[in-house]
Image (cartoon, rainbow, N blue to C red):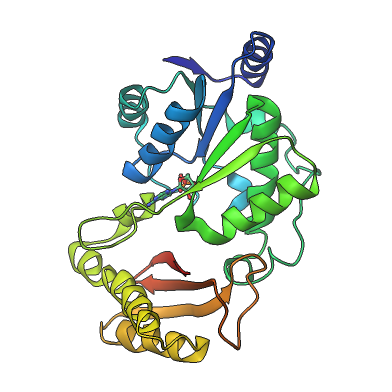
Length: 281
Ligand code: AMP
């Protein structure tokens, strides 16, 4: 596996791969890799000639009081996981290379969809995400890019950005990989103490309860929402940020049943903020 840390080297490698007619599959991450990330790498491995993974903890997507400084890191473990998954190139740029200006002036904005849900709680978050993903796309020059459904709104923002800017990249979204008790895998789960970790399993229990309810024919958004809230409230110490039932494309809250609905949850367990979702067909 080749490790690249400079933007210019990554760009020239991407150019020469493209000249050779190779397809580039790309998995952008912030590191502290787990099975969720690895599932994206495996899919990229199956469907591209060359697999590039990036690890970059992107400062522009963190708010001033968020966890940028304590975001977990494990460079040696990450390298080993990439190597085992058959990754060809690990791209690990420096923050100073990605953002040479003290005050960056160029951003990519995907309006409206970036301002609701996660964007309402984390102002500027999706501006940072859209900016760094476009920069990485311009550096890695992939044919295909792979993202996880766990970050549903992020996927929606990226799909819009790719479409809106006519980027010639195929975006594939893969299912959420979960722990045995249903908790969605996340680098941030490492913040949870044993008690909070146990409590966090309620998120998936709540989403599954709503899914089950929908399966029996009760599909009214208000009823699904209230089912999720009821189950979440059964676990002490879970603070609900939002529970929403939304349209799968626009993410607009639904007041009546639709064929495809997305149930989105964000909670705080102690100091840790966790998100999850489930799509109901
Ligand atoms: P992150 O390192 O958290 O920025 O995530 C990098 C990519 O991995 C994003 O596309 C995430 O949606 C995806 N991802 C994170 N957790 C999971 C998971 N549990 N299952 C599937 N994909 C995931």
